[in-house]
Length: 148
Image (cartoon, rainbow, N blue to C red; front, side, top):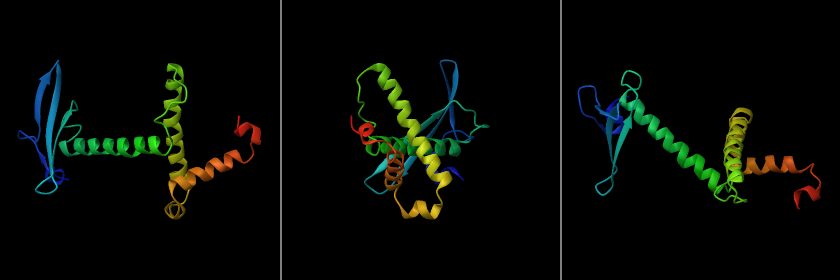
């Protein structure tokens, strides 16, 4: 995997630029994504990890993986699990709600990818699987427990 795969431009012989700031050593790589004549993206990736530990292209790949987590994970929490609204406006309630929302998302995906066969996963949506699991949980509860 070379720098050109990511459209990277980096200074120096070792494909990065190093500098010191507040007693820490930083490396910088610049990524240019030219999609067409009109749209160009220009990103700068900065890390404190030494080049022997993480090459420039791997560091950029880490950044893109982080974006995937943010774009897909947070999007699913907000749109699929309604985690953009807290139901009690108390600091302790909010501090308890958000970790539980993340935990349920992680457990759901762990169960889905570790216990459901790929053919079955591909034939139904995650939303369907989520609703099916909720129905299984709620089926044995008395009606009074579900609707206060």
